[in-house]
Length: 283
Image (tube, rainbow, N blue to C red; front, side, top):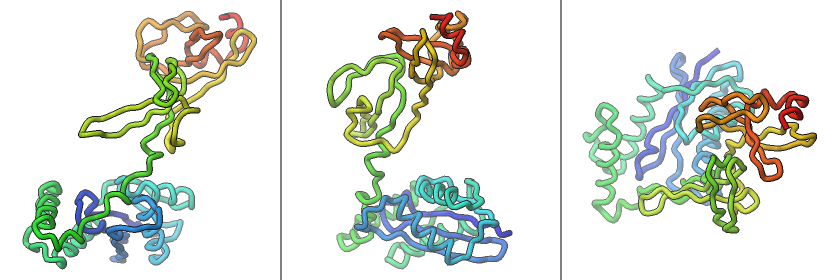
Protein backbone atom coordinates (compact mmCIF):
# COMPACT_ATOMS: atom_id res chain seq x y z
CA UNK A 1 0.00 0.00 0.00
CA UNK A 2 1.31 3.42 -0.96
CA UNK A 3 0.54 6.76 0.62
CA UNK A 4 -0.02 9.62 -1.80
CA UNK A 5 -0.16 13.32 -0.96
CA UNK A 6 -2.10 15.93 -2.93
CA UNK A 7 -1.11 19.58 -2.58
CA UNK A 8 -1.50 22.88 -4.42
CA UNK A 9 0.35 26.19 -4.57
CA UNK A 10 -0.35 29.66 -5.90
CA UNK A 11 -4.09 29.81 -5.32
CA UNK A 12 -3.79 32.96 -3.24
CA UNK A 13 -1.89 34.86 -5.92
CA UNK A 14 -3.77 36.79 -8.60
CA UNK A 15 -1.09 35.95 -11.15
CA UNK A 16 0.22 32.70 -12.64
CA UNK A 17 -1.38 29.28 -12.69
CA UNK A 18 -2.18 27.16 -9.67
CA UNK A 19 0.13 24.16 -9.29
CA UNK A 20 -1.32 20.75 -8.38
CA UNK A 21 0.91 17.88 -7.33
CA UNK A 22 0.40 14.19 -6.57
CA UNK A 23 3.38 12.68 -4.75
CA UNK A 24 4.27 9.35 -3.20
CA UNK A 25 7.16 10.32 -0.95
CA UNK A 26 8.02 6.70 -0.14
CA UNK A 27 8.74 5.85 -3.76
CA UNK A 28 9.61 9.38 -4.97
CA UNK A 29 6.87 9.22 -7.62
CA UNK A 30 5.89 12.72 -8.72
CA UNK A 31 3.03 13.86 -10.94
CA UNK A 32 2.24 17.52 -11.51
CA UNK A 33 -0.08 19.75 -13.50
CA UNK A 34 -0.90 23.44 -13.91
CA UNK A 35 -4.38 24.89 -14.13
CA UNK A 36 -4.78 27.15 -17.16
CA UNK A 37 -5.01 30.88 -16.57
CA UNK A 38 -8.47 30.82 -18.16
CA UNK A 39 -10.92 28.39 -19.76
CA UNK A 40 -14.27 28.51 -21.55
CA UNK A 41 -15.80 25.07 -20.93
CA UNK A 42 -18.13 26.22 -18.15
CA UNK A 43 -16.32 24.37 -15.37
CA UNK A 44 -15.83 25.96 -11.97
CA UNK A 45 -12.35 26.16 -10.43
CA UNK A 46 -13.05 23.14 -8.23
CA UNK A 47 -14.35 21.10 -11.17
CA UNK A 48 -11.37 22.03 -13.34
CA UNK A 49 -8.93 21.07 -10.57
CA UNK A 50 -10.79 17.80 -9.99
CA UNK A 51 -10.64 16.83 -13.66
CA UNK A 52 -6.91 17.42 -13.83
CA UNK A 53 -6.29 15.56 -10.59
CA UNK A 54 -8.30 12.58 -11.85
CA UNK A 55 -5.91 12.49 -14.83
CA UNK A 56 -2.94 12.48 -12.44
CA UNK A 57 -4.47 9.70 -10.33
CA UNK A 58 -5.02 7.58 -13.43
CA UNK A 59 -1.56 8.34 -14.80
CA UNK A 60 0.04 7.44 -11.46
CA UNK A 61 -1.93 4.20 -11.22
CA UNK A 62 -3.19 4.99 -7.72
CA UNK A 63 -5.04 1.96 -6.38
CA UNK A 64 -8.10 2.03 -4.18
CA UNK A 65 -6.11 0.07 -1.61
CA UNK A 66 -3.62 2.96 -1.46
CA UNK A 67 -4.14 5.87 0.91
CA UNK A 68 -4.37 9.50 -0.16
CA UNK A 69 -3.84 12.54 2.05
CA UNK A 70 -5.37 15.61 0.42
CA UNK A 71 -4.98 19.25 1.37
CA UNK A 72 -8.11 20.83 2.87
CA UNK A 73 -8.14 23.82 0.49
CA UNK A 74 -11.41 24.74 -1.18
CA UNK A 75 -9.89 24.03 -4.58
CA UNK A 76 -10.08 20.32 -3.67
CA UNK A 77 -13.75 20.21 -2.61
CA UNK A 78 -14.98 18.50 -5.77
CA UNK A 79 -11.99 16.15 -5.76
CA UNK A 80 -12.78 15.17 -2.16
CA UNK A 81 -16.27 14.19 -3.24
CA UNK A 82 -14.98 12.28 -6.27
CA UNK A 83 -12.61 10.25 -4.08
CA UNK A 84 -15.49 9.33 -1.78
CA UNK A 85 -17.89 8.50 -4.60
CA UNK A 86 -15.36 6.29 -6.39
CA UNK A 87 -14.30 4.39 -3.27
CA UNK A 88 -10.77 5.64 -2.65
CA UNK A 89 -9.29 5.59 0.84
CA UNK A 90 -8.42 9.16 1.70
CA UNK A 91 -8.06 11.68 4.51
CA UNK A 92 -7.87 15.44 4.61
CA UNK A 93 -4.83 16.92 6.29
CA UNK A 94 -2.03 19.43 6.33
CA UNK A 95 0.62 18.58 3.75
CA UNK A 96 4.32 18.90 4.53
CA UNK A 97 7.48 17.40 3.14
CA UNK A 98 8.14 16.71 -0.52
CA UNK A 99 4.64 17.47 -1.85
CA UNK A 100 4.48 20.88 -0.17
CA UNK A 101 8.02 21.87 -1.10
CA UNK A 102 7.56 20.72 -4.68
CA UNK A 103 4.32 22.64 -5.20
CA UNK A 104 5.89 25.87 -3.92
CA UNK A 105 9.04 25.30 -5.99
CA UNK A 106 7.06 24.76 -9.19
CA UNK A 107 4.96 27.87 -8.63
CA UNK A 108 8.07 29.98 -8.05
CA UNK A 109 9.81 28.44 -11.08
CA UNK A 110 6.81 29.33 -13.22
CA UNK A 111 7.07 32.98 -12.17
CA UNK A 112 10.86 33.05 -12.53
CA UNK A 113 10.65 31.69 -16.11
CA UNK A 114 8.33 34.58 -16.92
CA UNK A 115 10.97 37.05 -15.71
CA UNK A 116 10.09 37.54 -12.04
CA UNK A 117 13.33 38.02 -10.02
CA UNK A 118 14.17 34.47 -8.86
CA UNK A 119 15.86 35.72 -5.69
CA UNK A 120 12.55 37.09 -4.38
CA UNK A 121 11.38 33.85 -2.87
CA UNK A 122 8.81 32.81 -0.30
CA UNK A 123 10.26 33.23 3.20
CA UNK A 124 8.84 31.39 6.23
CA UNK A 125 5.50 30.88 4.48
CA UNK A 126 4.78 34.60 4.38
CA UNK A 127 2.47 34.14 1.40
CA UNK A 128 0.90 37.58 1.61
CA UNK A 129 4.22 39.36 1.15
CA UNK A 130 5.43 36.91 -1.51
CA UNK A 131 2.27 37.10 -3.60
CA UNK A 132 2.23 40.87 -3.23
CA UNK A 133 5.74 41.05 -4.74
CA UNK A 134 4.62 38.96 -7.70
CA UNK A 135 1.47 41.00 -8.28
CA UNK A 136 3.38 44.30 -8.11
CA UNK A 137 5.85 42.93 -10.64
CA UNK A 138 3.03 42.02 -13.02
CA UNK A 139 1.41 45.44 -12.63
CA UNK A 140 4.66 47.24 -13.39
CA UNK A 141 4.64 46.39 -17.12
CA UNK A 142 1.60 46.30 -19.45
CA UNK A 143 3.09 43.34 -21.33
CA UNK A 144 2.95 41.27 -18.16
CA UNK A 145 -0.84 41.47 -17.92
CA UNK A 146 -0.98 38.13 -19.74
CA UNK A 147 0.05 36.46 -16.47
CA UNK A 148 -3.13 37.42 -14.58
CA UNK A 149 -5.50 34.63 -13.66
CA UNK A 150 -9.03 34.92 -15.05
CA UNK A 151 -10.91 35.61 -11.82
CA UNK A 152 -14.33 35.40 -13.46
CA UNK A 153 -14.03 31.72 -14.39
CA UNK A 154 -12.62 30.99 -10.94
CA UNK A 155 -15.60 32.39 -9.09
CA UNK A 156 -17.85 29.88 -7.43
CA UNK A 157 -21.19 29.34 -9.16
CA UNK A 158 -24.01 31.48 -7.79
CA UNK A 159 -25.67 28.39 -6.30
CA UNK A 160 -22.94 28.13 -3.66
CA UNK A 161 -23.86 31.56 -2.30
CA UNK A 162 -27.45 30.44 -1.67
CA UNK A 163 -28.01 28.24 1.40
CA UNK A 164 -31.23 26.50 2.37
CA UNK A 165 -31.49 26.69 6.13
CA UNK A 166 -33.90 27.36 8.97
CA UNK A 167 -34.94 30.85 9.93
CA UNK A 168 -34.24 31.68 13.56
CA UNK A 169 -36.54 33.38 16.00
CA UNK A 170 -36.97 36.53 13.90
CA UNK A 171 -39.24 37.11 10.94
CA UNK A 172 -37.64 38.16 7.65
CA UNK A 173 -38.86 39.86 4.50
CA UNK A 174 -38.62 37.84 1.29
CA UNK A 175 -36.53 39.68 -1.31
CA UNK A 176 -38.70 38.32 -4.12
CA UNK A 177 -42.34 38.50 -2.96
CA UNK A 178 -41.75 40.97 -0.09
CA UNK A 179 -43.97 38.88 2.17
CA UNK A 180 -43.07 37.79 5.69
CA UNK A 181 -40.88 34.75 6.26
CA UNK A 182 -42.06 33.57 9.62
CA UNK A 183 -39.70 32.46 12.39
CA UNK A 184 -38.72 28.79 12.66
CA UNK A 185 -39.46 28.03 9.01
CA UNK A 186 -37.30 27.12 5.98
CA UNK A 187 -35.53 30.05 4.33
CA UNK A 188 -32.94 30.55 1.59
CA UNK A 189 -30.09 32.85 2.60
CA UNK A 190 -28.08 34.61 -0.12
CA UNK A 191 -24.75 36.12 0.94
CA UNK A 192 -22.47 38.39 -1.07
CA UNK A 193 -20.16 41.39 -0.75
CA UNK A 194 -20.84 44.87 -2.05
CA UNK A 195 -18.26 47.65 -1.71
CA UNK A 196 -16.54 45.66 1.02
CA UNK A 197 -19.77 45.16 3.00
CA UNK A 198 -21.31 41.78 3.70
CA UNK A 199 -24.88 41.71 2.42
CA UNK A 200 -27.57 39.13 3.25
CA UNK A 201 -30.83 38.59 1.42
CA UNK A 202 -33.62 36.18 2.35
CA UNK A 203 -36.12 34.25 0.22
CA UNK A 204 -38.94 31.80 0.72
CA UNK A 205 -37.73 28.46 -0.72
CA UNK A 206 -40.40 28.83 -3.42
CA UNK A 207 -39.19 32.34 -4.28
CA UNK A 208 -35.44 31.80 -4.55
CA UNK A 209 -34.12 32.74 -8.00
CA UNK A 210 -31.39 30.06 -7.79
CA UNK A 211 -31.68 26.55 -6.39
CA UNK A 212 -29.19 26.31 -3.50
CA UNK A 213 -26.38 23.78 -3.71
CA UNK A 214 -25.95 23.84 0.07
CA UNK A 215 -28.43 22.98 2.79
CA UNK A 216 -28.23 23.02 6.58
CA UNK A 217 -31.99 22.57 6.97
CA UNK A 218 -33.06 19.68 9.21
CA UNK A 219 -36.78 18.87 9.13
CA UNK A 220 -38.77 16.66 11.49
CA UNK A 221 -42.36 15.37 11.39
CA UNK A 222 -44.22 14.94 14.70
CA UNK A 223 -47.63 13.83 15.85
CA UNK A 224 -49.68 16.66 17.32
CA UNK A 225 -53.37 16.78 18.08
CA UNK A 226 -54.09 13.69 15.94
CA UNK A 227 -52.31 15.15 12.92
CA UNK A 228 -48.84 15.30 11.44
CA UNK A 229 -46.88 18.53 11.80
CA UNK A 230 -43.70 19.10 9.82
CA UNK A 231 -41.25 21.43 11.47
CA UNK A 232 -37.55 22.06 11.86
CA UNK A 233 -34.76 21.20 14.26
CA UNK A 234 -32.66 24.02 15.68
CA UNK A 235 -30.27 24.47 18.55
CA UNK A 236 -32.29 26.84 20.69
CA UNK A 237 -30.58 30.10 21.62
CA UNK A 238 -33.25 31.29 24.00
CA UNK A 239 -33.63 30.82 27.74
CA UNK A 240 -36.69 29.57 29.65
CA UNK A 241 -38.36 27.91 26.69
CA UNK A 242 -40.76 25.19 27.82
CA UNK A 243 -41.24 21.91 25.97
CA UNK A 244 -44.83 21.62 24.75
CA UNK A 245 -44.85 17.91 25.65
CA UNK A 246 -43.01 17.35 28.93
CA UNK A 247 -43.35 20.85 30.35
CA UNK A 248 -39.66 20.97 31.22
CA UNK A 249 -37.23 23.75 30.35
CA UNK A 250 -35.38 23.40 27.04
CA UNK A 251 -31.82 24.44 27.78
CA UNK A 252 -30.00 26.86 25.44
CA UNK A 253 -27.98 24.92 22.90
CA UNK A 254 -30.26 21.87 22.98
CA UNK A 255 -31.59 20.40 19.74
CA UNK A 256 -35.18 21.62 19.63
CA UNK A 257 -38.20 20.97 17.43
CA UNK A 258 -40.20 23.96 16.17
CA UNK A 259 -43.39 23.63 14.17
CA UNK A 260 -46.69 25.37 13.48
CA UNK A 261 -50.17 24.14 14.35
CA UNK A 262 -52.91 26.58 13.34
CA UNK A 263 -50.27 29.32 13.15
CA UNK A 264 -49.23 28.65 16.72
CA UNK A 265 -45.64 27.61 17.41
CA UNK A 266 -45.15 24.30 19.17
CA UNK A 267 -41.67 23.40 20.34
CA UNK A 268 -39.76 21.04 22.55
CA UNK A 269 -37.38 18.13 22.85
CA UNK A 270 -37.45 16.00 19.67
CA UNK A 271 -37.46 12.84 21.80
CA UNK A 272 -40.64 13.98 23.52
CA UNK A 273 -42.49 14.17 20.19
CA UNK A 274 -41.54 10.66 19.15
CA UNK A 275 -44.23 9.14 21.37
CA UNK A 276 -47.58 9.75 19.71
CA UNK A 277 -49.57 9.28 22.91
CA UNK A 278 -47.47 11.83 24.73
CA UNK A 279 -47.87 14.27 21.84
CA UNK A 280 -51.65 13.90 21.86
CA UNK A 281 -51.73 14.25 25.65
CA UNK A 282 -49.62 17.40 25.36
CA UNK A 283 -52.16 18.87 22.98
